[in-house]
Length: 482
Image (tube, rainbow, N blue to C red; front, side):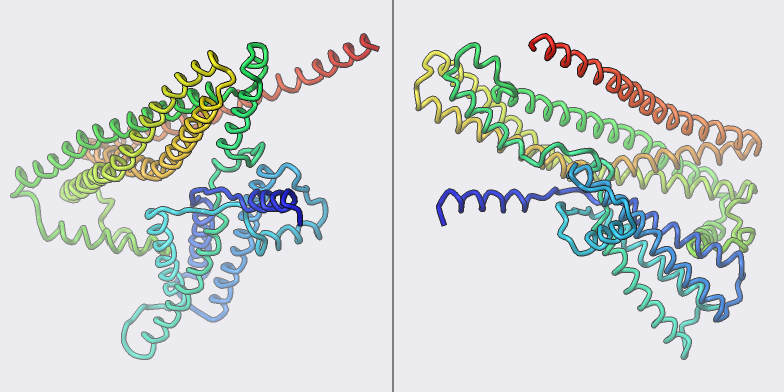
């Protein structure tokens, strides 16, 4: 086999093996879990607490039906990803072609690898454990841990944990985030494009008119990419600093409120009722998982009695302070990665300054091969550092999302503290304030969605108007030349 043919085959093989590294999306997992939770609620509403064989058949039939809905949702997301990654992907126009592409989804090698975070691992484990508890609760009238029934409960729980764990693992392999659903023009790395552009620049003998004709001048591209990375890092740092300042302020404020209540109301507080309140919270969460709401009045969680309200505020302040403390703790991992990104960007900036100096020398001595080699080496190093910094930024994004989630939960509980405090004055005032807060949040989300849709519609309209005009101009030029 000729060497050139072998090299071409090797290049084609490498090109085929290129894959995307994407983060795990929780949409498919959450969609499946919510459907199963709603199915348990439907089972409770239809049959109540009585457990019979026919009732269980209905419940497990719903679980099998949910598998079909989840597979359809996952298949649609996977199909959208493949179409955007490969514009040549055919649109299925028959049932046979749909089934063919569906089975290709199962056994065909994907062009991406999903990387999960520790938070996603914990959430998936939570889904599996709570679903196991749902199945046990729906299958037995009363959960006991002695005798023959305890062995049966253990067997059902083990089977449910194993089966649903495999199902969650299977769905996780197709949980591509929405950020990856954008159309991809080409699967060529930035480094190879920069190398080709630099070779074209050097082959042009650096003539003035040829330099201006070269698109994506690598000397300018380096500056743009480094500035973009520096800007993104600066924005991430500003967000983290804002999260830390908010967490320190609100966390200290809420925990000091907890200490103030304990220190000032020792005569009014009943520590037995506080322990009972904690026990009722645990029982309420367990009943919430299995869609059981008949014992809400027994828990006294939502009572407007001043003593219960005081205990509820104390509980909310501790949770609020805990969320903000977790935000501060999450900054440790961010600081370590941010330091690596900063060092990488500084080194890339240093190499970029050297590249500019060598480029100026190259303009003065166009035929100097040593300058050509030095320019190629510097450009390659900058390319590697830019890609390395981009990979490090991808590692930081899950940490930022984790901090944002904890910060939002802390702010939400701070809002709950205010609403609960207003219950001391009047229930109507508390409901009005809560409704106003919810309305403000919904309006903000709707306004953002409306602006994005309107901007996208305007862009599409202008693109649709300009395209025929360009075609008409080209037709006129052809007719004139004829």
